[in-house]
Image 1 (cartoon, rainbow, N blue to C red):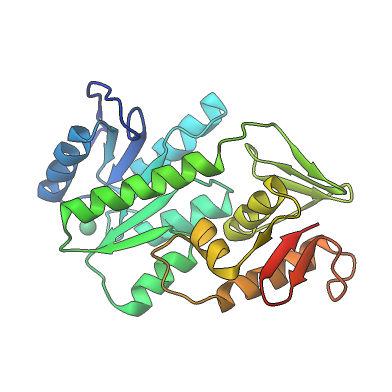
Image 2 (image 1 turned 180 degrees about the horizontal axis):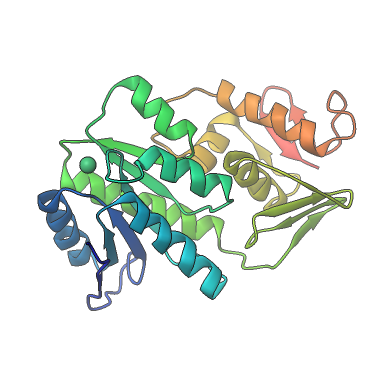
Length: 250
Ligand code: CA
């Protein structure tokens, strides 16, 4: 019964201009308020009021254009038809890297951690401050812009090849499956060979400044990534531990 509406506002000259946001929210009042505020910031907003419509919008446009139609998704969790967590899980399973900001009345630590674990990039609890929400959207869009700066079809380091736009990775001629975080880590590494990264810096770049976990999260993901990249993960040739500092690639 709901149809997605695409509304455009005049472009502005700041960072947010032309960024496309999909807002998935079934509560009319919250949705209308968000559309007004985000349009005032110069963003282009599409809305969906149930999970199925949201998923259709996200998946169809991707195959039609060969590129991702949205720069950011603001996602309510309790939605008709398909809930937000399932949407998140499904998108990540399909390799869709679009930044996702969960906006939910479920505010317990378990809910927040679960949201981030299924692949969301940030989590805001209702009731929320509009200023904070806009600021976090801006931060996610900035990060996405940064990570997608080199629009190269392929990045190669020795026997590792990463295809940024297809979210695919080949190691020694064979495709390997990476989780979204592993993919982002590798993308960051391969864009900056031999640069030394501290755990905090990696957390900031890959998980975001608002991430609530600690730097052990980085170590765990590095271990998983090594198992997929290295011939012998206990003697890594790609992801090198730099004692006292962190990690470097190559
Ligand atoms: Ca809801």
